[in-house]
Amino acid sequence: MATPKTIGSGEIHAAIARLATAITARHGQGAKLLLLGIANGGIPLARRLAAELSAKSGTLDISFHRDDIGRHPIPKEFTPTVLPADVNGAIVILVDDVLFSGRTVKAALDELFDHGRPAKVELAVLVDRGHHRLPVSADYIGLPLTTTAEEKVIVTLDEKNPTRDAITIRPASRPEIINHPS
Image (cartoon, rainbow, N blue to C red; front, side, top):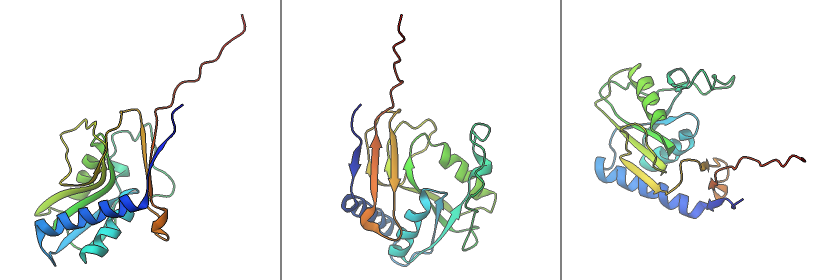
């Protein structure tokens, strides 16, 4: 089995800085932005970006909007939606750690529009790994990665110790071959 590939904190911090720079280039300094981290992976990234941009950050819980809720029930400990400002007329940037199929973004949009009507919604992701199944693309991408659909991309953003930040790409797991004695 192939070894996992790891991207370290230096490259991750540079990617977050690129995201913040791109957002500032589009909206200017001091823009009234609302960054909403998609629970759970987007929350620490939204907080970091909000700190760099002097913007407000909140969270979006997409549990009730997921299209696979029958296969993946809502966990007992979930992160509720917390909006630090009114979304009506706001420029909202949805923030997530990994963009894959696009289904999470669709669920986040459904949750967001349950709370109001923003003037504009954009998407910032740390990793875009391709393989989108819905017509979704990010406005801001920290790291575009080439992966297979079967690989697993795991982002760890350590809020207490950012030097431990890492992105791990695990190869597709192979089914075990069991040899039965004849």
